[in-house]
Amino acid sequence: MTEEDTKTARKSWRTKLLAAVGGVSAALLSLGYSVSQQKVATAVPQVDVGTPISAGRWTVSVLKAQVTSELPNGLSVSPDKRALVVEMSLENISSESSNLYGDLLVLSDIPDLPKPDFYLLRDRSILWDLQPRMPETVAAVWEVPVDLRLPETLTVHVQGAAFKPRDNLYAAPGWFPTGDVAEVVFPLSEVASGDGN
Amino acid sequence: MASDRERKIRWLSLASLSVLVAAAIGINAWRNVDEYRHRIETDVQPGPTEPDYAGATWRIAQARLIGDGRDTEVVLPGEMRLVIVRLSATATQTIGEGWGQCEVSLGDGTGRRWLPLDVVLSDDLSRDLDPAAEPLDGCGITSLNPPAANETATIEEKFVVPASAVLALSVTLSVGALRPAAIAFPLGLDRS
Amino acid sequence: MGHLLRIFALGMTALVLAMLQTTTPPYAMLTGPIKTAGPQSERVTSATFAIDVATVKQARVLAYDQFGKAVELDTSGMWVVVSAKLEGFRQTMSVRAATLIGASGRRYRQSQRAGGAPDVLASKIVQPGLPTTGLFFFEIPEDELSKMTLVVSEQYDPQLQDEISVSLTPLPGSPQDRLDIGPDGI
Image (cartoon, rainbow over all chains, first blue to last red; front, side, top):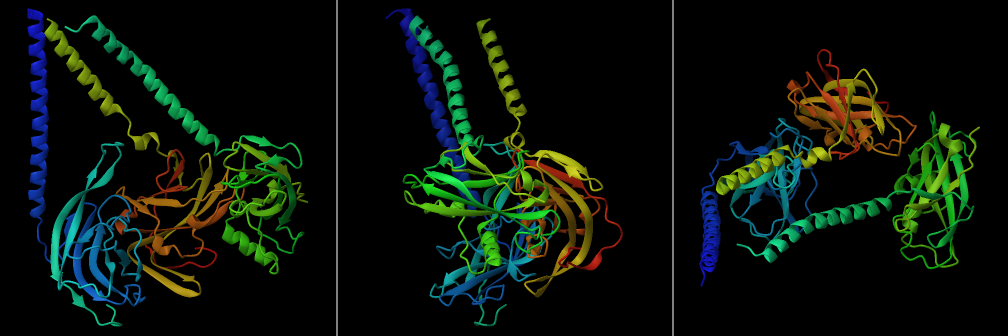
């Protein structure tokens, strides 16, 4: 083996070592990050009914929940369905009108829920945009099959969103989900049919 | 130290990068231009009175001007006029999906372009003008069920235009697959 | 010597890359709207359409008939109703997007709550050569009323399309309690 060859071999060995150290540390970092994320996720604050929760784009205070056969707009739910209605005060604190409140609340106790419809109680009609700094009382309605067993206490997970002035892909401003920010647990009252709310 | 051969390959790959990037941009641009060409009508054929286009011979069957009180008693406010155009197409071959993304528009030669009224409004107007007759379909609906070879279909489109443009109007028709090629007919409406 | 040179080259490369990154214009700006601006007293004209803002009114309650049924809409802030004339130049179009920028800079899109009102401009079709009049409806907090700009375009978030901004003259005096919208507007 010449001196030149020894040099080359040593160099290639060093390169391999460096690559291995890099790869392992990247894996460890990512593992640590996801573990810490898990830890944060379990530490979601429990919030009382009626307390304002700041969820990024929205400030929401959950007011009450009930099961009924009448929709907030006065129409009846189809006979094989019941409506699970969660009333809340909702304020858009972003800088522009928005209707992106569909993913704000998650009911983790009840599996396979469709997306809720939102109603504006002021008009007793479908909710469209919420204007910035104009809080409204609104109702989120999940239509569930009549025979679905509903829990007596409902757990509502409020989903947060964070604003990024420049996102990673298009350098455009936007809101990005940050997961659970609060948890509200409260009794689910049943309303006799025809009683409305 | 890297051998001469290695160094040569390294330079070659670096140099080829510029060619590849240029090629990628070129192909992408060409695709976009091609797609854009299928949305515009630049090659309008005002030529023969019964041109061959999209597997049929076309002619203008009727052009009505409504709103000045002459064609019907309807008088529309101000400059507003309703123009109804009927085009007849006799299929010379099997058309199939050849009329897909069909577009009809009116132009006045100065670059202004009027698009047809939507289906619901168009049918409502047809029933108002002639309650007894079944409204004729527009180009879009007819393209889903085009005439068989040697059969004739008549399509109708309605437009709202200003009275001052009526004299100069011509109708242009094109289908997605053949754009930017299109055919055009002067309407020959008089305004007085 | 060779080492120093190499480190210097590396630093320079990093610097150039950082400069390129910070000066890259965002995608939203490259493909943004083509803007035109003017005051309410003038007709503001872009290449494809023009707008004339005639009157702006404020009220606490909006009232109109829809399908023969009386509708009354209240608000926690103020209703702002803009009556305007649109004219298209090139091709049949609609001006579906209207936003009111308030004194704080927040953007209030036209209210869909009043979507059933008579004469809503956003649902009209604008034909070249046929000016079209109608109304835009907004719901806005009272402290935003002191300085407002109306922004209109064919659709929201226009890309490489015309967008016209009209700075509105400050509203005089106190608002009406109730604004009735008849078939002929306000």
